[in-house]
Amino acid sequence: MYVVRRRGSFPRERIQVGMEDAFRSALMSGRPLQTRSEHGSAPAWRPPIDVYETNDALIVLAEIAGLSEAAFEVSIDDATLSISGERLPACDDERRSTHEMNLSYGPFAADVYLPFAVDPQAVTATYERGLLKVTLPRLAGTRIHVNTARQGSAAALADSER
Image (cartoon, rainbow, N blue to C red):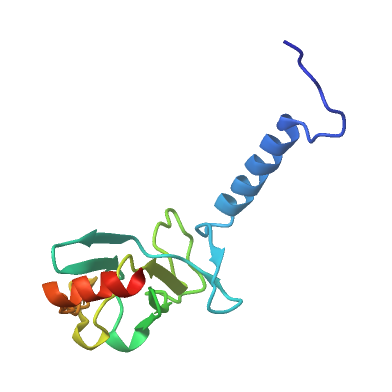
C-alpha cells in the first residue's frame, strides 16, 4: 500500500486554528452565530422546528416565542413552506452588561421541504404560547376509473394486429 502525500494541501492544524478563532470571536461578541437569510442580505437565525407526518397531514411546529402575529409570515411556494419574521430585543438599554445570551433576535427564516402535495386551501396555522403549528393536509388524490375491453373486442383487436 502506498501513501501519497500531496504538496500544496492546506494543513489541518491551520484549518482547526482558523475555526477556533472564528468561534472565539463570535462568542466574545456576545451574539449567537448567525447565517445569511435566503430572503435578503440581513443576517438571519433559524428557529427550532419539528416536522412530522401523520396519516393525513404534515405538521410543522416552530418555536418563535415573544412575537405578535404581525411579526411573522407563513407562506407556501411549490414544495416549500416558508416561515419568516423578526424578533425585536425585549430590552434596548444601551448601558447593559450581558452575562449570558441564548436568545436570538433580529430577522429569522426557515424553509421546510414538503415531501408530498398538500391542499393549500386547507392549510391551517395557529400560534399559541410561543409555538406556531402549521397543519398541511395531504392533497386528496383522484381515482381514475379504468374501462375493461369486452371479450369480443379483445379478440377483434388481436385479429387486427396479425
